[in-house]
Structure formats: C-alpha cells, structure tokens
Length: 165
Image 1: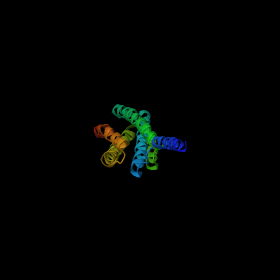
Image 2 (image 1 turned 90 degrees about the horizontal axis):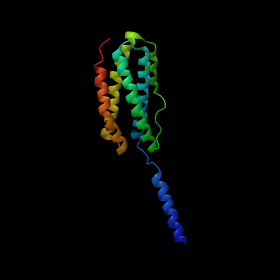
Image 3 (image 1 turned 60 degrees about the horizontal axis):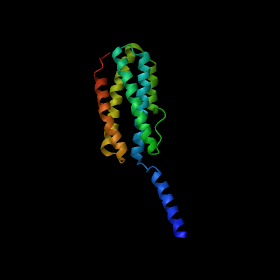
Image 4 (image 1 turned 180 degrees about the vertical axis):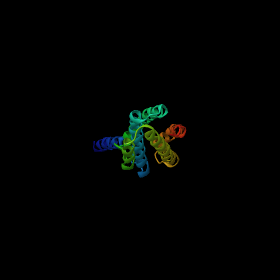
C-alpha cells in the first residue's frame, strides 16, 4: 500500500511539474518585455497620429500600425502567459519621452517627426526580432519572432515610403 501511495504522489507531483511553464532564458524574457513595449509605443503613436497628423498617408499608415501592433501584442501576450512571463504594461521611459515629444506637435511638423520615428523604431524592432529569430532559446518565442519579421519589414518599407514633409 505504501508503494502505491508513493507512486500516486510521484505521478501527481510529476503531472503538476509538467504543467509549470519552463524557465525562460533572460534573453527570451527580455525580448518579450522589449517587443511588447515597442508594440505599445507603436499603438500609442498611431492613435496620436489619428488625432494630430495632417497627411492622409500618415493617418492611413498610423491606422495600420495600431491594428497590426495590437494584433501582434495580443498574440505575444498569450505566448508570454503560457511561459509565465509578464509583458510590458507601458512603453519604456525613452519610448514614453518620444510619445510625449510628439504630443506637442501637429500638422506637417507632427507628420515629419512621426514618419522619422516610424523609420527609426521599425529598424530597431526588426533588429530585435531578427536577433530573437536567429538566437532565441525558446522555440515558440523564436517562431513568433520569425512570423512577425515580414510584417515588421513591411512596416519599415511603408515608413520609408511615406512622403517627405
């Protein structure tokens, strides 16, 4: 009877252990935090552009950024939750400074600053995702980064194609 109880307890412990998310590497957890923060920044700036941009091209681009990054952050949030990791709840301080700076602009000045920020931010995001896609430890997070790279590269191209202001 003792050996049966031991086997039951061992199986219960093993089952509980198997349900616990695996410990992520610091680099993978950092990717989740940085990627989700970048997504939040793109959403905030896109919403700001809807209010303050004068160019229809910028407004159209911004609407796409809000939609695409909201969808990406939702998927990243689900993935992070399955790994027991918290996504960023707000932009990083430097990103928030950029948002605050653009809040003080409107019209063509806003369009120019937003366009420049989108080119710069998407180059950084593409680099972040490429690094994770190439060197990430967790296969699911690596696959997520690989799946998002074409979208980010398209965003980068679209930002490059915004007219000069």
